[in-house]
Image (cartoon, rainbow, N blue to C red; front, side, top):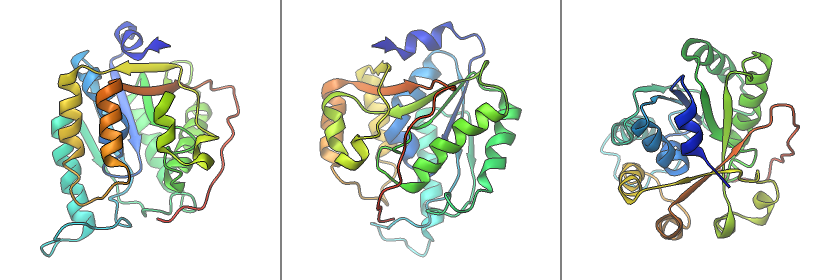
Length: 240
């Protein structure tokens, strides 16, 4: 499998745009890549489309709304990851599939930043969350429509090996095949974990298993998108 670090090294336009729907996606899904890109001299912009207001809260809010809490958690995690430009929007959490105003925000930032590399979820969204899936499909379409695909590489976060067992069979069936991998130094793993733990308001299924596999494999996996290819995807029953 190819090394994503080796590819990033060769790129002259060192601008990376990370696009995710919710606070915490950045740390869990691509924290290692963000930290590695920063070490290679990249300017990293994170575009988070919602404030996670539909999520559940697992801490004492102390009078704050969930949106306020999760936005603050995201800001803290972004500092640990070294993100240069943090953009937090307030589109409706859980409704990106039916309310597509976020498309224009993605277009505006692609035009303004002109990134060499864009990263988002693969068509399963890893978890099967409809926001994740719709963003994956939409970002690929937007990049193609804007005719920037020849200058911009689109990567999807995916899984490989035993890590595929972390997701349900209905999700696993549509996972994009990993064709690039990131091998993380232990210092990067430590920083990624610190960023993940900033999102204290959330509770995650299989968190201990996720952390254990990350420490053992030291990997994140990505799929370099073939912009001419139609990728299968399916919305599944998902309890937001």
